[in-house]
Amino acid sequence: MSSPRVRLVIAFAIVYVVWGSTYLAIHYAIQTIPPLLALAARFLAAGGILYVWYRLRDGVRPTALQWRNTAIIGTLLLLGGTGAVALAEQTVPSGTAALLVAVVPLWTVLIDWLRPGGTRPTASVLLGVAAGLVGMVVLVGPDSIYGHGPVDVRGAIVLMLGSFSWAAGTVFARHCEMPRSQVAASAMEMVAGGVACLVAGIAAGEWGAFHPGAVSRESLAGLLYLIVFGSIIAYSAYTWIVQHAASAAVGTYAYVNPIVAVFLGWLIAGEPVTPRTLLGAAIIVAAVGIITVMANRPRLPRAPELQRTT
Image (tube, rainbow, N blue to C red; front, side, top):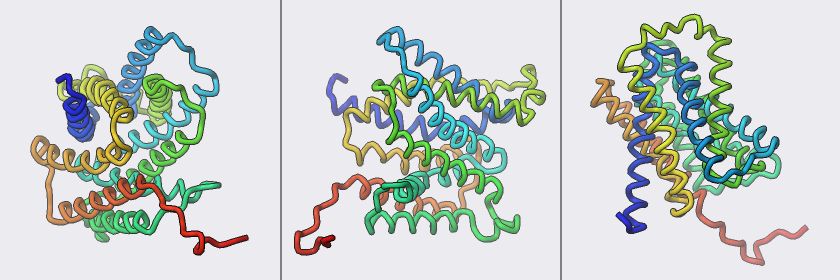
């Protein structure tokens, strides 16, 4: 257990399995708890615990600019991204939702390319982007547009918007001032995202529709699982991985989580897995793998005779 390799394997296993299982946990949590209020409770609880622990350990007070930046990121990631998952899972199976969310690296590449001073992706990355789009079309299916397909088109659109929001928050986080501590940044993002989810839930009328006495044991268990395992344990493992693993390996969770989610949705919740689901899953997972690996490869400088002069 003291071997760095063993610790790395355990950390990856936690991120792969736990983050892959959060889609199923959300499925149960929102059965008797309104989606946005469930997320507000999850992120406020987990973020508050991590923030208190960080302040007691380090005692460094974040600046107002860092709070502003983490609030923007938390809103884009947790309200826009995870909030979209919770809303969409009211009509979309958890495994399918995970597959559609797996295209986040696709949007991340495109947003980073189109931003001012952005980085142009390589041909291999663009191939992965194109494959990801094909996988989405296969998974959703043209029949869904007319309400006859296997996936609710409105839920799929919400997931696409949520994936775009998560990618936008990811790109913004790379180019703004953040707390030096990963734990502090995560805690602040979760607190801000939890507040955003609470405000959005109240604005959507979820507070009036929430009846604490009607919360089932399954929903409560799902919420507690999201707080403890999804937001505290798995994120701690992920931050450790970021510091000890290669960049290309860090991103592998993006195409392992959907496989875990589809399997658990089928095994525990009885969600259907059709040949179209398997085909779409294979294409999306392969596309995300190409994007994740190739985007992290160093670019080779051009030969002097091939460089254009100005």
